[in-house]
Image (cartoon, rainbow, N blue to C red; front, side, top):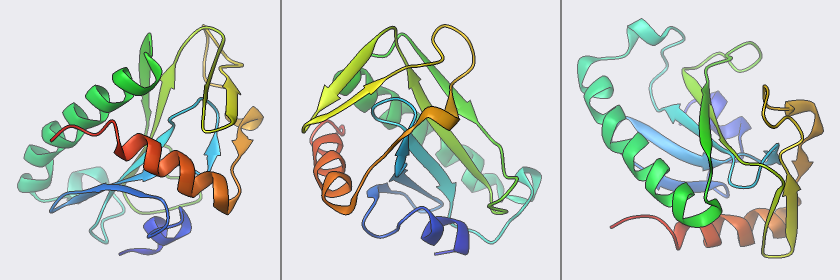
Length: 143
């Protein structure tokens, strides 16, 4: 796994794995169920990914949206490709909703709703919470 994936807590944060992508629980939760969808390659430009990674992206996104709809009932979903600090290709996946959502004793308000996500107001999960929320989300994963 590349350094960006490791920085987001792999393997403890791993939710799902595909040939070209991993889905990780985002340790800082601006909204409940926030994830990182990261390419497993060393590519630092989106256009450098192989065609097969682009094809598989549809499968990964479909699973993410099905699981998050079941888990948090989002109204919108944001895919942010920031890549400012962590250089490898990845998206921050932020489910959006009015108000708050809770699971496993963690409560997260969407502080930015209905505008841009308030990434700076994220709830930082500890190791125990990461394990509990990751297991909860895996329970909603399709297939």
